[in-house]
Length: 444
Ligand code: TRP
Ligand code: SF4
Image (cartoon, rainbow, N blue to C red; front, side, top):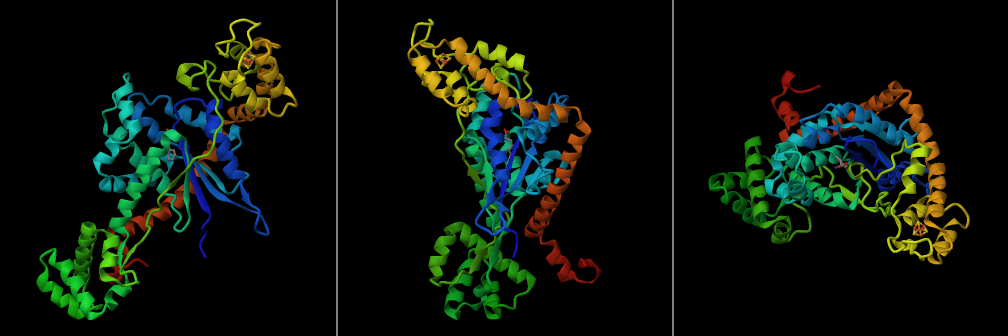
């Protein structure tokens, strides 16, 4: 029996240091998936095989004109991953790798690009938005349009036939995973198409209707008669003609209609899942607005990075935006519209009574915002200490960091190479061809 454990795959572009928004929006969940184990078995087994990666090629889709920061950012993001608690050394079920160190992604990207209609890419909402909004870079390049195709390759090269392939992403990335599913479906419909053995066992009359009809479509009437007479004993060319004809018919009327057409319970055609359709895995992530109340983002300067010092944290949180209605110390406030309270919920939940103290004190003007922020900052500092400590340790040992990354890339590459062998055979059928030819052409 094969290994059919759920696979998890996700990645980030190395565009700068990660902040606590990334942590609560993604990394925390990645760590949870790495640690999840199935308790129903006698010996608990890890629930997921996790693959996390650094999408350095994807960083180029927009930063192609200046790549000077990509290598350093890749290293820094790896340090952030490790600091956040991803542990590819301690967990056999967690692999972290670098996209460009697994060149098979690019080969699969090329094959997928052949079957991806341009319209699908042009309609991706994030693509249209970026073209409209990004003014400081020219995004009218082929790589940027093809972003979702490369992303599809990233994901489905880790297909494990029979096992779900899960992609933990934010709401904004769901449309990408949706496109991935469509690309995979189309890929499978071309290269996973097979006539089943039952096809050749059809009753004479049904077979006649079927094959003649199918081959008729391609003006192969003469061949149709011969092929019918031969049933299963077809030459390579005849088989190919038959497959082409049936495929043609399927593309015209659809697989479902075709099955209804011949009214047999046995499938005549098999659709092999060469690649697995991925599923977006949406997890509830807590809201963590930036210091100014907008979405947390490095470019807004409203973030706290994973390496921020205590002094920086105190200084930055001191000027955080609060409930705008609370102008004076004597005005009561509403914690439910205050970013500081959102942060309290993340960092102060374990301190007995603290959340009640905020709610009570805020709504009755019993406490001031300065006190409230200071209490939150101290808890944030406590929370960040172990993360920052791990970060500092790795920062001082970049050689070790690279070793861990290279090790992961090697492991990922093995898996990717296995998939590509299957994919190449499905697309070109060279193994089959070599066997036909025989002699030294046939692979050992
Ligand atoms: N699009 C992701 C980002 O913006 C990065 C990414 C590339 C990715 N390939 C992926 C995420 C595959 C999940 C799965 O950060
Ligand atoms: Fe926000 Fe705290 Fe001020 Fe209330 S007291 S408005 S929760 S900072």
